[in-house]
Image (tube, rainbow, N blue to C red):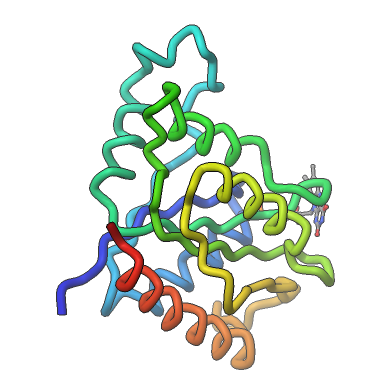
Length: 181
Ligand SMILES: Cc1cc2nc3c(=O)[nH]c(=O)nc-3n(C[C@H](O)[C@H](O)[C@H](O)COP(=O)(O)O)c2cc1C
């Protein structure tokens, strides 16, 4: 079966981002079924209405990648019970100019990790609200929240988390296949 093309956005842009690690684990588990290509959101300028009709090349390449992808995977950190501004900036760019919302009808999955006990629940619920407005078809179940382990022996997630991530990947793959435009 043909591999699905997935656009990946990671809301953590630090060198040691735990969400980047989670994205990499996800990509490894899905590689037999999906080509997941990450767009580096830190290359985007701050969104500004003055330049939306003549945006820099990075914005054009984000919008091109959205158009050529079957689905979207967002891996979000939690900042002050919401998702990071740098991620919102990317969503805003993709939604403009008015009437040219590139996210429209795109099937998507949202996951995330933080060191805390609720593992990005606050961030993901706020992110889902924005994705609803953008008319993204976000998968509702299963949800994936991960309290990131302090240590990763052999650079692997502990087996119970890995098993749950595998389940999520399987459901995500089915979701994209049955909802892509
Ligand atoms: C500005 C800021 C706000 C944060 N707020 C939260 C929070 O509300 N909930 C939480 O679980 N962790 C919070 N954290 C901790 C982050 O979850 C932690 O720094 C995590 O490593 C960020 O993800 P990343 O490593 O992928 O960038 C916050 C961190 C920062 C820098």
